[in-house]
Image (cartoon, rainbow, N blue to C red):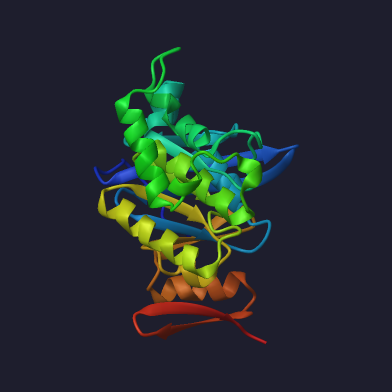
Length: 265
């Protein structure tokens, strides 16, 4: 199995790049010398066993954790961007995010537009239009005047996704975006991701649902804080890496045009 190739000079289609990325949390090394390249107009899924460092990698890419090594966003070093500018270019949906329960759905999604607003300025027509599009895309428009505490777990997850979509960023990072979503809404999420990619967005998602992760364009397979493999989801080498990191407890097979992962006894 080949490890992820070490990126060199960023190419025009590069959305994000990491070189020698390392993260320590509480004096524990969680990420070790990670190098990767994420393409524009591409959906990349990140998979691996529990404790592999998937969520830590995503947070580091978002600039939310101190790290060693270097990160670039759209061809520029990540620290070169001001906070507001970076927040316009890179949107984040974290795992298990919380918000004030009395906050109305519409107001929560509008928070995604803060990077586009001037200091102390209220939302303008473009902000309201973006929020309306995001609520429509996630099927959450009918709840726009409801407080969060009146929503189910799945409904709340769709609202948080709408907040990330409202940013209309060029790069969208999502950690376990399918949490609490039933199969029909997982299918809706897949369609939404494909629409984003068709518009040129780079989508990166940490997923536990391996069969869904295999529908991405590319996959990062992680183990022990390292990226062991990066490649196309349909490639035999990617499937071999998956089987290895899950201790040969899964099998990969093709059903029609899709690749599926099933537990192996």
